[in-house]
Amino acid sequence: MRIIAELPHPDFKISILNMNQKFIIKIEQGTLEQSYKIPEMDLTEGVNSVFELLDEAFLKTVSTRFIEMGKDFRESYYRYNY
Image 1 (cartoon, rainbow, N blue to C red):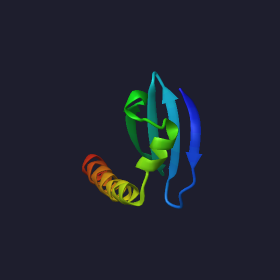
Image 2 (image 1 turned 30 degrees about the vertical axis):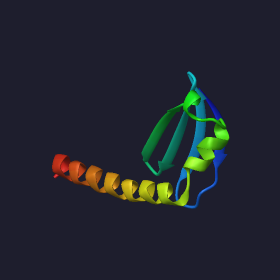
Image 3 (image 1 turned 90 degrees about the vertical axis):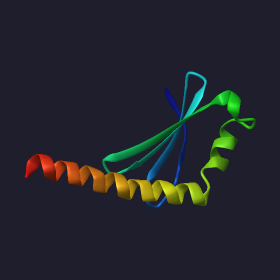
Image 4 (image 1 turned 180 degrees about the vertical axis):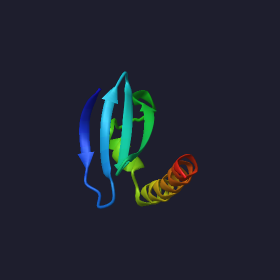
């Protein structure tokens, strides 16, 4: 697995990786992580197509999902520890 690009974003770290003929979009925020795998053959413009997928609407849903993930984890943690 190798990192082929890192994209700046004010709220999370975005890395594009390449492994086994797949692009992997890895998005991190604190201790949480979301990843998306896309076969290279599904994208006509290679890594440039990956950049196009990371539009404002998609990143907004990623942000919302991070909020939900954090809430879910906190609820589970408190059930276990209290």
